[in-house]
Image (cartoon, rainbow, N blue to C red; front, side):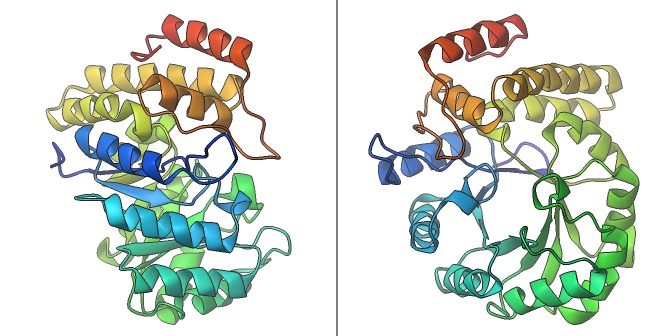
Length: 299
């Protein structure tokens, strides 16, 4: 069980074998690792899970595997796609296998340009799984869709009966807080920027989804515990320490470096898929040295 009421959800990597195929066995090991490190759930096939680089069939397979091995973890399935109809197929599948919720980002090639277009787009996806909690996945750095969520939320709430909240991966904390307070706090706001989690908690966040919770969940639990007991200095120190690790990860390749760090933490998830590039042995050595310099416990 989580050590606080705060819900910490990992965005797990999708493991691949040397042949490039999804590695089922490692999904089970990753699920066990998350449960053992005080993580509450898994948001699968999202950005960290390289969902857009998987086929629809592969995404269904990964979701099924997570449902089979999740144990106590709450499994949310990302169903976003450039094709709304593919998203609907993924959403219906997630509902059939019993996912706790679905998330969907906006189409990222032909993009919705207005709140109305965005709401209508995601409403069509949500309607394929009408009894499954639906989360809009706001990640403008990747989709290019940067509409204010404080304007999206009331329109979407009236249009999407299954709307449960927003996975908010952006740094507009004023917008985030406005969504938190909308309708008396009715919607779950899943914060998605690990490096500023404490700032979101100070605004009222009670849930988060992030890639570094795969291998740094205990550090973030320390942050949350310090804040809960009123030790602002310790909470800020924990956040700053985590941010230094994240900065190293980003400088060494982002997601590809994260996969290398997951291997350092004991669960090797294999390479990334093109167009991303995996780190070679020299790059991993350099990454490990820089991580050791900022106190990453697995370096």
